[in-house]
Length: 127
Image 1 (cartoon, rainbow, N blue to C red):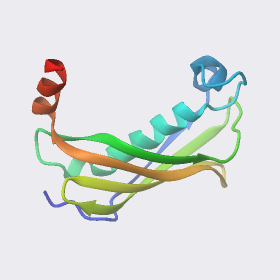
Image 2: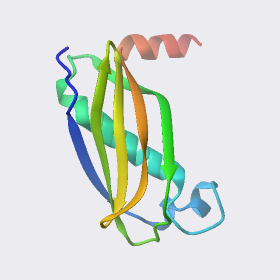
Image 3: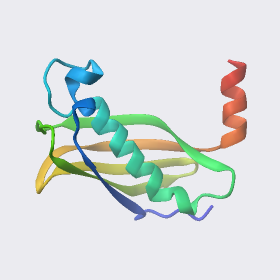
Image 4: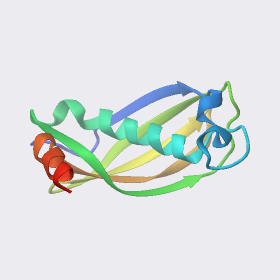
């Protein structure tokens, strides 16, 4: 594998009613839910390295550190960004952020482990 720090990805999503804390059960208000923020940030980390992984390999999340800094209402478009900050063997460390326009709505770090997809699933199904 030839993964190097600096790989990055950026994705955009429009916040819908299904993305709110009230809809996801993580709160009672109709603003972008922290679990959805995390999902979008993880999606960006996956995309950042997807084309660089060897066939049959994938990554799985192993650690998250996230600060959700601002509320984003339904209808707004947000941009999730991930940059591969460090490669330590099979562990990938990303710096992530979510922007609502130019405002920083969330930031943090995500760690993912490189695994062989079929072996990982087989092990998970054995329990």
